[in-house]
Length: 41
Image 1 (cartoon, rainbow, N blue to C red):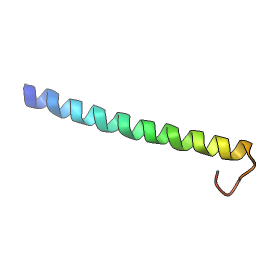
Image 2 (image 1 turned 90 degrees about the vertical axis):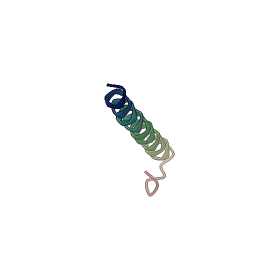
Image 3 (image 1 turned 135 degrees about the vertical axis):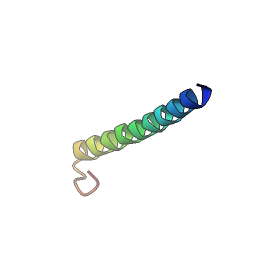
């Protein structure tokens, strides 16, 4: 049971890490677009 929950927790942590990275990249792209730095966006 503990191994199962530990596995789920590990997958959840990985998903959160990837989601945060995606959000960061989106924010960077939006900022670059607002500054008209289209090659960075």
